Length: 288
Image (cartoon, rainbow, N blue to C red; front, side, top):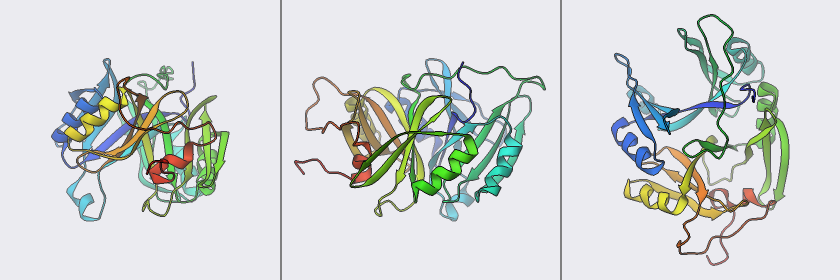
């Protein structure tokens, strides 16, 4: 069984309109939705094939007043939340929410890297006993996250932080006119990549790619639901397409999947050396 240390285990959307976001993602990604609210704390669980894959909470009004926008947050599994939170501080990051326990369920902490990109730590608890490792879904599982991408202010500095913190390993490095794209692995499996953002992207952030069966059909659902396509669909290695979007409340997310057989339009196929240059307009199609 693959170790969960250094692996993304949970994803959470903080949004300004939970009802609208619930309907949007249920339609676009095909998720089910369960109410898991507690008194004064509305919460929704998104499910795929009966398995919980992500959560949704309300973005506090006080947060919007200071400029925080709807966003997705990734939770990374660690063996020791307290020790990792301290290590974040030692490496120049910030702990916004100290290690907190959900009794008999989990322990978590919310933090930011030195470039102020938000992420969270997570560990399952089991009533004081040594918890059993929980199986991790394969990256291509429909409805789950198939890729994790850090759009960094400086990817090399970001790599030093995350590599030290989670024990990630560098895998393939793609180099082109737009700069390097560094893929990374956790537990022996390549799970994501990072690159330095172009100047047109204001803030660095983590981008999560949700698996869908048909990217072209999903694009139609995004538009019908009030979302927007930022980039793509663009065909990448392996016969799949990627698409960057915003939901109706403004949270950024991405989709990855196959194309419709009857899809119309030109989509450039990338070689294995070229993935970074389509991110956020880094490379335009020849017909533009």
